Image 1 (spheres, helix red, strand yellow):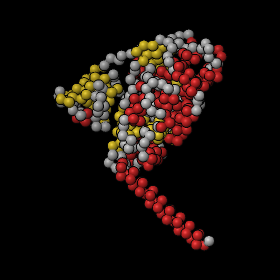
Image 2 (cartoon, helix red, strand yellow):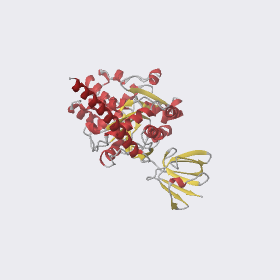
Image 3 (cartoon, rainbow, N blue to C red):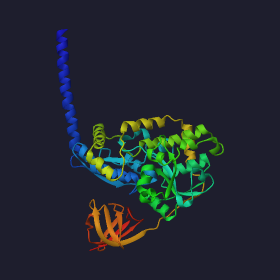
Image 4 (cartoon, rainbow, N blue to C red):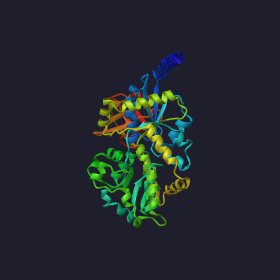
Length: 437
């Protein structure tokens, strides 16, 4: 017996030694892979919105917390409310750990409902985590005369749409389930363009996350020019609660239902769309990424959220940080997966907008002036246009940049040059930038 005990202790010591050695070896392999690497953050949304802001914030800080200290480069790949980006990450991009994605929170629900477009399975996505839980809001400009949500039953309001996300899902559900009279204007590339259209009187309102609504709307929203009509959330948001904005659940009563609907089903349908809000601003990696690299990226993500420098940067951007772990997000996706298929199919039918629909074709704006500031090696360029600062985002692939008539890289643009922007307006991505010395 004593010999057996001695053998057991010795074996345990060897095993522990091998475990430490193996663990160190794995860590060294991860650090070796990431050292000197440029990791892409594929953003499934357009420039200037909330997803874009969170992605670039992460890109500035995550590398300090990942073994090997790689650099991160953010790249917008918008289309179909992040379905294009997710399809690319899950099926085309390398699965070696050199690609992470920041995708819209609805991508799991869209796939589970059987919508056309997704070429991925929600259960196969490997989640890194999220930086925020999101309450939703639907809001309308006060100059329309709107007083409360009850006005939407009798008056038509034109809402801006971005694709298969909250901007179009919620107006559709309200029309189909609660008999409101929203009108949908589709085709906007991002929430900044929607808010600009509201200010110009071309749109009446928007449905989106509360955090982005405040941030993108800026002073126009802060001054009370746009009225929040309803909280689309499972739990009250403190800011909206102070403003007296009603919870959606309080509006779902027998008197407010569309023909053929019942309270229980309507509450279930809306709850399904609000669960993704808990996922907030999710970051992900593809299935097939080596587990050690996924684990290292997750640990780095969690450590970054505690970094004082990261938190200061987030505060500067007026972004609240509330960590949702990758494991928590996976649990939510698993919960969605248990919903009966017939309910998901019915929800998919209710997402089809019933009401007046138009599609906007935004004009290209041309602004010219002297370059007064460049940031991040030409990714953002600011000019003085007739005494006003005008900023353009510059894509390495989607923005054509010329200097004295010759095609150049964006980093060639310097302060003092004269440049002409061809874009959708201030703070949007330029389609073309023409510069001269």
